[in-house]
Image (cartoon, rainbow, N blue to C red):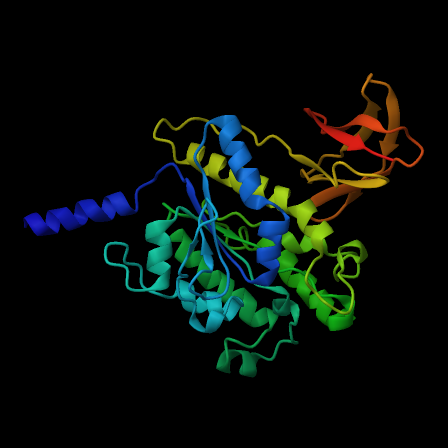
Length: 361
């Protein structure tokens, strides 16, 4: 009887609502570049210092003796991912494992026992999506088709719903270089990303409060549904380049921070009302020597005005924003300006957000 009571208490402790401090990001090479070239770990640590928080960002690459990296940059043996498969079919294998956080005997249980927030991303080959073939898809869940992707992520959603004490952050997969795809396949990749970002959490009419989708595809893709020209490495390589990672890394870090902040308030025992998320604005590169890009989140039903002012508060320029599904972006060519400090001001109607930038000729 005592042993049974201890087990019950241990289960409650293991799966209780908490401070949501430990984040794990599962990825392969594109995610590795995002983390390191995009300085994700540094951005989260800077937030910790500024706000007295203690978030820990861990990430896992391919299986290996040193491919799990902790929040200090220390290396550890990885958790085992079957065949290194982080395509949707691999995620299906992972999420179908039985949950046991007391004596974890599988990878999913270890993830749930050791971390509070689980972010996971497929690499760009996941965008090589074939036309649906119901018979073939039902026979082989690893076949890359919209039919299979939808049904896999619905199963993942159900598993996430069953573990409300953990937070899940699926990323839409990064788009392909135009030489590695065709218009029809690229359109299917956009279809899947749109479904995951817009439909996945609302299609069943239920709430899924512990799932937050980061729309990576939309940040990287152009109107032809392939990797944006300024984010390409060249030579047909679909890995986003350093500019892409330096631009998007801080956005991903801020997204994770906002996810934690939101879920902490959502599950607070005091039941505090959730404060509206402050819109975030990023400028990259910063410093810059000719053109910089301003990126912010798109808020439903709101237009955004983006203006540039010099250090004395004098108006310099008004930028024309372009709107995609999840993001708003604008470019500023400062070649006609003097070297110095400027301010990018984004007016959301209900609030303004200002970012300091340094232009160096």
